[in-house]
Image 1 (cartoon, rainbow, N blue to C red):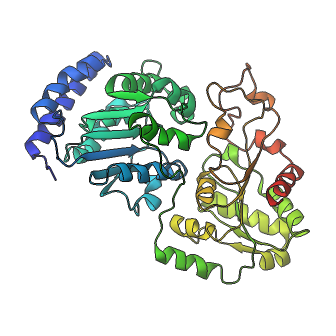
Image 2 (image 1 turned 90 degrees about the horizontal axis):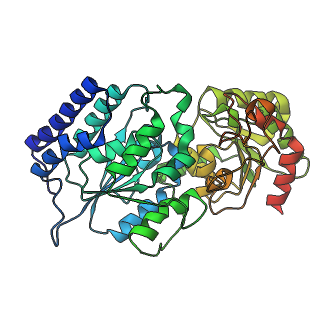
Image 3 (image 1 turned 60 degrees about the vertical axis):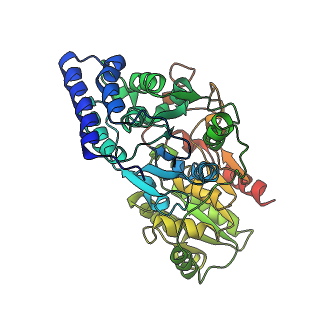
Length: 440
């Protein structure tokens, strides 16, 4: 491994600090100034040297979103290893993705970035990025593939010192992931969108289209292979990385379960995506009236456990005790992933565990808060983030409620409430119809 001297790391980090001092003095975010401060240090420290013939490549993969989005990247990581069999591959992920990422068999090293993005404090963001970059600068990365959701990631990609830096183009990333930036909270003088667009356009060495090779985010991830490497993707499936112990634990949890097993998830981070647990209970009753199934409630956190209790009360103790296994707050994320491999269907909210279920090859039935008449720019958002390579039914409200449909056309994501809102228009009968479609 081509290790880096501490003096080289200090040379580069001091150059970044000098740029930050200049930024704080001028309050002018100027990328040419950034490069003028830092590029000479990168060159002197050897980060701008092309790999020599026969030299082992150092490859960096940066992913900056939560566990559901990370699952959608697993196939691309496998393809990178296939195409770079001898490379030293480093994977950087956010804290939320670590439970599954830490057992990835295709990388040599994993770094965890624990920062939550704060768009209104560039000074803090810059220093955090610099602390992360200190770890990355211990390698001289020849290549970096950045899977960008957050505006600070292109800047971090540049600060890593990678010789070649690749990402999707700025306009498409903004159209697709603008939800993560919360632009209404930003200072007018330094918007999140400006940071992402300017850094993606100027700090990457190459950008490519997200949509040229398909209409799903997984296709966008594979586009690095399709477009840049010009190599046919050998396997387009996703993977789940858990341990044999996780699988054994899952079997133990299901000792009393009678097939078929349907996973239920009524929680998730975004409350506007929460279908009322009372309606899930109604749906479960409708299914039990026709089919002899076991329901497995998954999830972690207060919202999930509260929803499980509402389902228990709505179903009644007699039905719940015979037909439901409540594992909320009783399993790790990897154990939940292993449990889903034993399930015959996922019924639940559009959240990370839904994508885990799809990767486990569970058919998916999910209510969605985004209205069916939502216009789209380049790709249909609901389809772009739909369950991948499994049978699924997504049930949407026909339109947004008035509060979310102000100044049509809608904001890109339709429902913009901070609580269950537009999704409550979906009826239990709508979902049951979707269930019949999947089952038949």
